[in-house]
Image 1 (cartoon, rainbow, N blue to C red):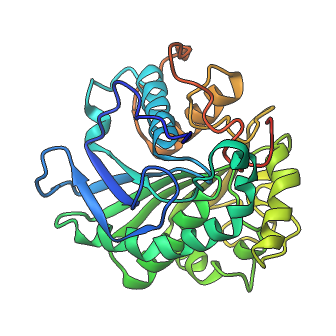
Image 2 (image 1 turned 120 degrees about the vertical axis):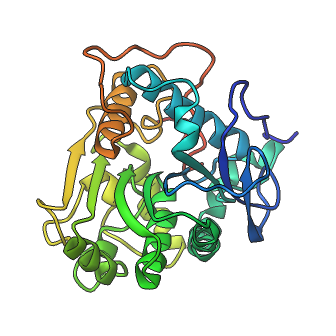
Length: 311
């Protein structure tokens, strides 16, 4: 039986960057599909792009995005219902596998393909962003392997010069530290962003068991051996902009899935507050954050990196 679950009730995004052929597993959609609520051109000048991580099917990604919205509305008292649909653009990409039944636990074997999909999805996402007629600048908030997709996309947008890159928030980034160091894959773009004053915030946790154990093994399978993940150790000392345009925050006791806000945990609350404040989602933070309760589940506890049974 397929693990695919429908999008949660109440989730109605105003803008989607849809890069999937199927809701679960499958290949990249070529070209990507720019979906708006009214099926009309989106005339916004600025967009905050949300990018989910590895091994999330469409329903899980939508649940994470809804959790992030719910938490931001609880955090910022100046946000009115519907405001975030004018700001957010939700990305859906095939970083998962559709191996059901007794093979479900083997999803981790699809990780090398997911790394390749993160790279291949970047030009498709960049193309959709450049198709938006009035878009001038774009921010990113990404999680896990979605941070790799975000950085690959940012690299392409930096080379093209449009739209401008505003702020970047990387949560539990499944990105090798070597790629953001001198001589690394993203060094040229990071140097350019540093010169432009683009701010980057890295949210990380040493208690992330997925990044501690599963990530190095997965990267080895993908042919990208690494000493560790950006989302576990934070920015390396020689990452361009570190301490100036690149800042960091350790999320206390955070597991790999404790970032989007879909779970009522202190780590989730801290992560979404840090992300929302950094990204300027609202201007009037509440003194005490309202704890999110309801049907939102802890997305990715057994799926975000797939082969880690519990985070």
